[in-house]
Length: 164
Figure 1: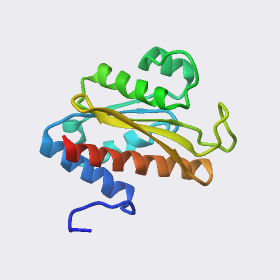
Figure 2: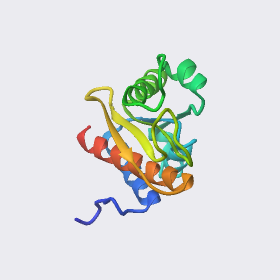
Figure 3: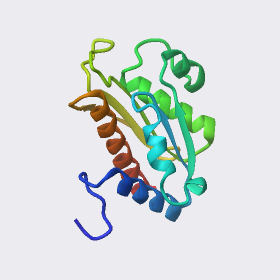
């Protein structure tokens, strides 16, 4: 790894700081839409440098009703690739940010919608390049699933900002 790069093992605060620097360098606003992480992505990003300049905020939509009413999710299951994409699209539309990350999933301890605990759908992209969704299978207790999801979301944002 070259100096200044952030790898998969970088601490969350370092990843958030790298996201901040990339967003500032590209002069873009970043937004998040969160379910399974309950605002933990917002906490990480909000603590990074000059967050008020580049971080539009996060829409924490934990309940299905809020996902539908605030983020525009259609009918059907909420732990799906389609739901993650709709959450990302809804956050972009609500904030006019340029780069987005959205997460929905099963933190645990038990399954939801037929999906095992640790199943997370992470959507990331930009208003220009579009949204891509990845399915993650994470292990551990619910708090560990949240931590891993936050780390994956920040890593995805950093990759996306590298393309912007």
